[in-house]
Amino acid sequence: MKSIDITGSLRTETGKKATHDLRKNNQVPCILYGMKKDENGNPAATPFAVTVEGLRNLVYTPHIYVVNLNIDGQVVNAIMKDIQFHPVTDAILHVDFYQINEENPIVMEVPVQLEGLAEGVKAGGKLALQVRKLKVKALYNNIPERLVIDVTSLGLGKTIKVGELHFDNVELLNAKDTVVCAVKLTRAARGAQAAAAK
Image (cartoon, helix red, strand yellow):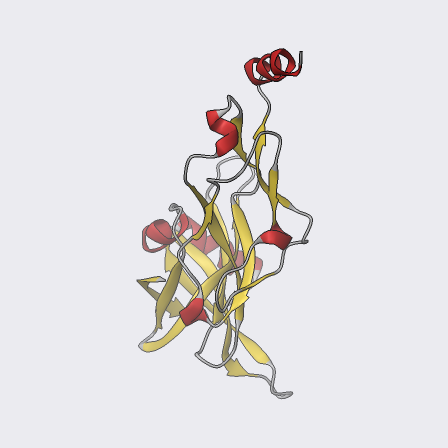
């Protein structure tokens, strides 16, 4: 997985007014889960802020990244867990990060990439990607940049479901009957099938 550097600063005030002031100054309120522990030993939330510009390369990309997150000089590895956009302007309102390490598996969505010329496409069908990302669980060192699926043997009207897929050192969390891709019958392919059946 590629990595990206992001620098932020701790937030001492977290109320509505403080958040509003941050956004007015082109800053995005963020939270990092896991840098500290609370009194029960659970990951605590560390509020911090990053400039809109500092988040651009992480947010507006099809790639997934491990984030080298520098908060006031303290550097941790993290992944982006959640992001909120303004419903009208699409401005970034808030980002949640989760600290990662080499011992504990993480859950994140990984883009799907189809590879090969499907048999069903040669027969006149149309290949359709139904799910653009799949949710995986793995140690972050084992998470691939994309999940490559070979569709060469996929026939007309056939599908590939999550339950049929396997990737080394990665657990797929989507429902096993979720259709990832399919070769759909086009009108021309239906006509050819009907003609062949006569």
